[in-house]
Every structure is written in structure tokens, then in C-alpha cells.
Length: 406
Image 1 (cartoon, one colour):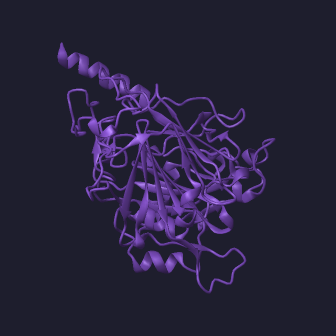
Image 2: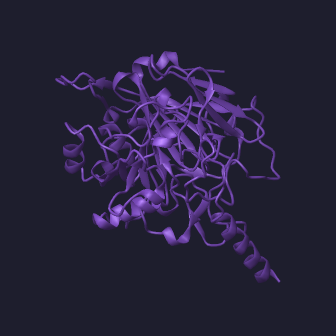
């Protein structure tokens, strides 16, 4: 009887994994290979009560995220979240990081709800971009608007062991940087399908792995300019990698010291129902508001507008929020009108870890481009992180005092 029940659970999961939702941007059907995870931090139920926001988080009992009797059949641990939600067929393969536009006219975005981790960081002109991390390239949904890469984004991606994917780059620095540091990257810029009529995946010819969705661009009240409508998808990235001999083989290390969701010990934590992250004068309200029922933080920006994924018409949310204050400066001798900025991860810094309605002060390190980000408590001990999705804000340390929380 037990074996029959397990088979029924596996069959139910398979149906969930390959179900294709019909919601999309505008009235257009979603072009996605999206999947639903069987156990996520947003939907998890437990018989244990959470610690009230007025109680220091360090009083909680730590538990690891080792497999248990409730681990979904055929699933392995997602190295980005610590949850058992990745198809075991992906074992021994690298994840992917994709650069996504985040200026106001490029919103809403696509594919952000299914990213396990999102980095947000300042580029030239005070605008921010996202680096969306996915553990399984074959499951990457339609993603956009895909934009050009920067050295800082390459370093964020390299520290996780994933392949860095972008659409164009700062060619004065990125190619030499990734070569010198053995960072695996792929530039989609040479494989664009840019037709006035082509806007669906079915229209994209062989040998092209990204395209301009001009129908998306022309939706009323949305984006302007072709640079804000570039998209790609997991199956196209796989074709591009195969054609260009990009090897996905490689074990992915755990991104953080994950423990069971809600059980992370947070030293000297204080209650945090919301935190407003100041990235620059152009993006001064990266707001995360805690939903105590779901135990996640919902993200808004640009005058309080919910940050949406229009593939599924949902606001993005995360179990963990990190704010890493870091030296960010315009590159010396850069005479371009944009003045590209470099993120000096090698200097490390201070920051915050926010989760489960609490905030703790941290320090962090990333000595080289290929080193992971490590976060430490006030005693110098590596922190525990609740299993679940994370949003990592990389903020100029000149703006430390402008990030506020309550």
C-alpha cells in the first residue's frame, strides 16, 4: 500500500511539473516551460508555530535540510534554495544566471517568480539590473527583458558555480575579465532574431536563440524601445550551449548554510516587517514587506508598484532578503558617456540578513570573482539561512544610511 501511495504522489507531481498556465502578459499565452515546485517556502505548511516577531530569532532550534520521509520522489536539493525541488535528472549540472533589465519602463518582467535567487545591483546612471539564478536550464521559462552583462554580474554568477548568460556586454571589460578568471559565460548578442513580425518562439528560425518580442514591447502602458523587449527560454539556451560546446557538467555548491525553513538562528535579531533599500537616486525604494501568513517578503519598487512577473501575473516574493553594502564606483579612466561602474566585492563589507520577520546585522566576504559570498554574524560565525528563495541587494556603501527598516 505504501508503494502505491508513493507512485500516486510521483504521478501527481509529474502532472504538476509539466502543467502550462494560461496567464500571460496582456492576453498572450505564456511561452514557458514553467513548473510548480512540490514543496516551497511560500506554500509550506508545518505543525510548528513560528517565533513571534517580538522574540529574538536566535532562540529557535536549528535543523538541517537533509532529505526526509516527506522529500518529493525524484527530487534533489536546489543549491540556490536548500529545498528538494530540482528534478534528479539535473544532478551534476550547473545552474544558469541571466541578466534582466530593471529600469522602470522595462517592468513588468518575465521569468522572475521562478528564479531561485535574484541579485539586484546598480549599473551606470543609477539604474539597477537583476541577475536571475535558475538551477535547471531545461526548466527556465520565458525570461525578459534580457540585457547586457557587467563585470559585477559575472562575479556574482561565478561565485555560485553557474554559467553567466547575457545579451551583449560591457565589451571594454567583460570579455577580458571572464577569460582571466575562467568564468563560463555566453553572450546571446550574436544570435538575435530581430524581426518586426517575429514575436513568438515558434517564429524563431534555427540558429537563433533569443528574440525581440515586439508585441510585448507595444502593449499599452508598458515598455518603449527594442532594448526592453529581448527574451529567451531554457530550451533555446540549451540549443545555444550545444551548438557552442558550452559544458554544463559540474557540481553546484550550496549557496548558503541552509537550515529548515523558519529555523535559522539569527544572532541579536530585531523585528523587521519591512525594509526599504536605497540603490540610487534613480531607484530609491526597493521595498520588501513581510507577509506573516506566508512567511515571505513581497517586493515593490518605483513608487510602491508591485514588482510583477507577467508570465504568471504575480508579485515576486522571497523567504530571505540580503542587503550587502559594498564599494561601488565608476571605473577610472572610463570616458564613455555611461561611466560603467565596478563592484568591489573583494573588499567585503557589512549588511543585513532579513528572514522570518526578523533582521540581523552581518558582515560578508567574497575575496575573488570565483569565491562565493559568505555571511557572518557578530561573533564571526557563518550564519544559518532559512531554506527558500533569496533576493540579494548589492548596494553602494555610500548609501548605507539611506536603507531603512521597521
